[in-house]
Structures are given as C-alpha cells and as structure tokens.
Length: 506
Ligand code: MCA
Ligand code: AMP
Image 1 (spheres, rainbow, N blue to C red):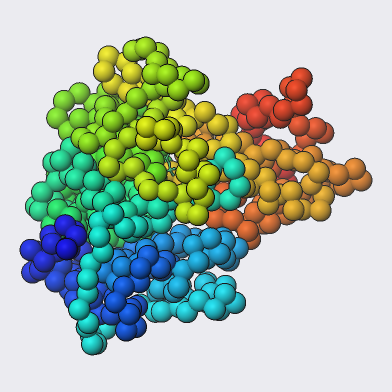
Image 2: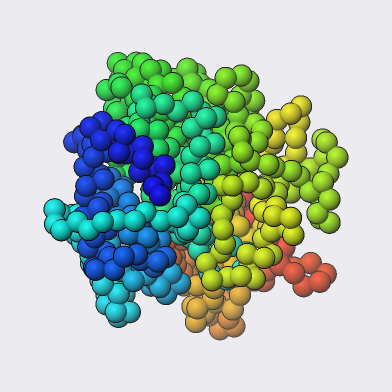
C-alpha cells in the first residue's frame, strides 16, 4: 500500500517540489533522501511501529526529508517549535517520549542537553539523508498516526494532538478542492512548521498537489514583499498579524517600491488568512493596496480547516464562510442541542479530517467528543444569511496572540513559581498587532517591594520557561485580584485594567 502523498511525489519525480529558498529541490530528491533517512531511522527494523521522532528543523528541504523519513519508516513525526527554551523542549520530549530527535546542526545545541539526559539520540540533518544502503520500505497503513502537534488547553500543560495519515489526506483533499489547487500552483511558505496552518494548509497541500512551495526560513515583511514582486507565485497564506505587518511595511515604503510590491502581489491568484479573527480594517486595507480580498477561513489543530469563505463568490468581511467539503459543522447550546438558525452556539465538527486522540489522554479525548463523534471546539459562532461568524471562545483562559494559542493557566503556573508572587491572573487584552496580547496581573506577598523590579523579573522568568509568545507583554501589580461573590477571579475586569491604562511597570 502506498500513501497518496508519496504516489504524487513518484508521479512528479522530475518536477520542483520546493525552492529552499532559491535552490530547487525535485520531488524525486525528497523521495530518495527521505528513503535513506528512513533506512537509517529503522536501523535494521521493518517498521518503527508508531515510535515518535521529534523534529527540530528549520522550514525547508530538511524538514520535509525528516518528516517523510519518519513516515516512510512507520513512525510519528513530532515537530517542535524552534523558539522553545529548554524547559518547553524538555516537556515535549517527556510527553512524546520520542525514540530519537532529528535536528539541524545549528539547532542541535538547543536540545542536546535535554535529549542526552533522557538518553534520546539526536540525529543530524543533512547527514541523516545522505546516500547509503536503502532497504525496502513498507509504507504505513493510512489509519496509523502520522503527526503529533502540541496544543494548549484549559487544563494543565499542552496536549499532543495525534493526526493520522488518513486525517491529513482528508484535510488536504478538502482544501485542494475548495481552493482550486493544481500542480501549476506555487505557494510561499513563511509560517512556522509546528502548526497545522504551515504544515497542512501550505506545505502538504502543495506537495500533495504536485505543486511547488517556495520556503523562507521565517517571516520578514520586506522579504515577503520582494518575493511577491519577483513574480511566479500563485498563493500565499498567513495569520492576521502577518498581513498587518506587511501593510505597515508597505505604508513606510517609497512610491516606486510600493508600486513594485503591489503589482507583484496582484499577480497571485489567492491569499488566505486564518488562525485568528481577521480585523475588518486589515481586510480592507489589504484589498486597497493589493487588489486581493483575503479569503478568511476557520480551523483548529484538532480538526484542520472547518469553515471557509468561497474561492469564487462573496467573501463577507468578519465572516468565515461555510463548512468545507467533507466537513460537517453545527452549533449547539450548553446542553448539546442544535441551536435554531440565527442563534449563537458552540461549534462542533465531525468528519474524516478530525484528529484521532490526545496523546496518552484518553479522558481528555473522551470529553472532547460527543457519543456520536462530534468534536467540541469551544469556539462560539452564529450563522448569518448562510455565512458563519466566529464570536469568540467559551473559555477566557485560552488566548490567541499572533496566531499562537496560549493557555493563561500555564503562564500563571510559571509566574506563581516566583517567591514574591502570591497570586496572579493572565488575560488576553485586545490588541491591534497581536489580536490579543498576553498581560499578567500579580498580587505580591506581604512585605514584598511593589516598586521593585517585578515586571522585568517576571518576564525574564516567563522567558526562561516558556515559548516567547507566552511571555506577558505587560505585568502589573494589583493590591488584590477582582473576584465575584463566589470568589472567582473576574478576568474580563482585569483585561479592562490593561485596556484603560496600558502602562507597564518599570
Ligand atoms: C513572536 N513574539 C510574539 C509572537 N511571536 N509575541 C506574541 N505573539 C506571537 N505570536 C514575540 C517575540 O518573541 C518578540 O519578543 C516579539 O514578540 C517580537 O518578535 P518578532 O521578531 O517581531 O516576531 P516574529 O518572530 O516576527 O513573529 C511574529 C509572527 C509569528 C510572524 C506573527 O508569531 C508567527 O509566525 N505566527 C504564526 C503562528 C502560526 O502559524 N499559527 C497557526 C496556529 P521580544 O521582543 O520580547 O523578544 S493555528 C492553526 O494552525 C490552526 C489550525 C489554524 O486555524 O490555522
Ligand atoms: P489552534 O488550536 O492553535 O489550532 O487554534 C485554533 C483556534 O484559532 C480556534 O479554536 C479559534 O479560536 C481560532 N481561529 C482560527 N481561525 C480563526 C478565524 N478565522 N477567526 C477567529 N478565530 C479563529
């Protein structure tokens, strides 16, 4: 049996799959080098049988080769965020228990210590993919786990979302059809490769279509505009913060540069926004300067993409369209009953793209689904004249900053580890750049110096424990946290404190 992704690659052996960032890489190269990598990972075995392999690799050819090698050896790829400090990497390794880590030489130092202390070998790119003895590879059954992505929840530390090969095939099939992908497409990838957005919507859709993906190792506004201006691209996908940054770069550019950038952007056939609400002013300004009305869609790590505005037809501002092909979506009330048309409810989703399980968390998996297989997203929405509109999340403890999901509770746990912090509350404050910015209100223990260097110290503490996007942008000391009559902290009130007075402490 062969997976459709690799069938496509075989059928397109000579064609360019990636430009990394300028050097072309053919589908055949990716196949040959990932086969060599798979053989090395197998080390004489027939099948990794679902063993996890962590990937700490910069977006580009080595990332694809590493993930394909893991898949072709029968393993589960666990992409790690490059920006993670050691404690996050340690947590990821302890949770996934990979049998190996694949890392770029320039990233090895970040993970070598935590891997060594857990006796996990670190295999380096590109040596892993060099020519060598290549054994016969039996590709895994589509029902087997392929990818484990980390997601923040309302309880405890991040959970591993396990997606099967069949899930990934269903997700890419749905998007390829809805957004009209063909092998003639050429997409620019600037998103990180530890999320569905970059991995599935951009990279896997391109590879599965026999299309081409031009990779930049990270986002930079001028580099993206220059790439648009060079021509040849047909697609771009990003989070709202990225479109805002691109607009800001355009606003400060001189007239000839603006003209060149705008003309380049206008040659693409489609630009997509998602992962967080797209502010209407961003949608409108982008349309003015590029002629593109962004196609906004809605998704989640556990389900891939669920709702999308149409490729052809009206893309209504502030709305995310309707269910994608192969996706069932409905709105329910607190008792799980479908709400009448026009009323708000919580989105539930069902379909072949929906994930298999939370890694080693059967209880959390059970709670996330209804008995008849609907996944409860926790996002509220309403359908208005046929188009879905996202209203926000049920939980105040899940924040979204620059497209990254953050658990307020996880940040609070880290801040509480400071000897002077008696209590704290982390909130998401509406922010034009980030969507929401992470802010922390803290109450100090009696006898602590409220004028001391509390904010920088707590931010430094957060930075050493957590991914950069989880670090509070602002920290304020309060006498006490506002609570309701039941003693529950009133987070919306705390968020208003930061809105009314955005000054940080020194
Ligand atoms: C970086 N910083 C952030 C973020 N990213 N702070 C808050 N939120 C963030 N997302 C910090 C940096 O550490 C730095 O802190 C300061 O902000 C400025 O950094 P800068 O270099 O300007 O940021 P950047 O590295 O350019 O990153 C911004 C970014 C990036 C390009 C918007 O965050 C990004 O690529 N976001 C997309 C994430 C994504 O793919 N999400 C999809 C998941 P300091 O100055 O203190 O050092 S959702 C998903 O997959 C579902 C399925 C879906 O629907 O799509
Ligand atoms: P993640 O769990 O990181 O995959 O993020 C998924 C979450 O991002 C969803 O549950 C939504 O809260 C949010 N999201 C994704 N797309 C949109 C969108 N177009 N509008 C509003 N929120 C979105």
